[in-house]
Image (tube, rainbow, N blue to C red; front, side, top):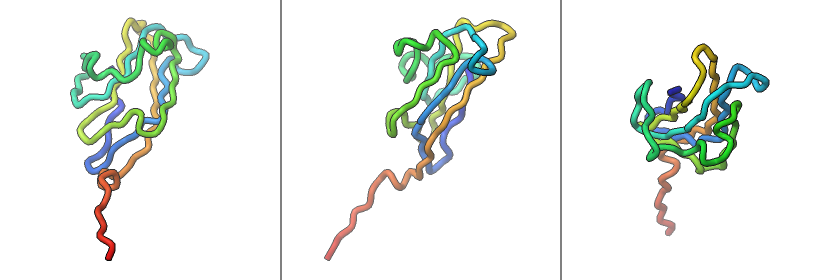
Length: 118
């Protein structure tokens, strides 16, 4: 499990892209991946199917490097949640690398404001 972190207090993240694999695009890496958003963090255990947001059912997750892009608000992480990447069936001694791109928003901006116009 690779813990990619989560938003700071008072902010939320919109995940925009991720890439997972060996040390470069030409390096084959064995295994299947699962991308999870959850408040559960354990370095050795998957949070389970209830937290899975991308992975094998999308058809490419058994091929690394795996890359995907997401539209705005498609994968949102709120305060207290983390993004974790599980690599299953990997090779001992293989170096795995992951990177993500997120948009960070202040949480208050998403709530809206009521304004009375006179």
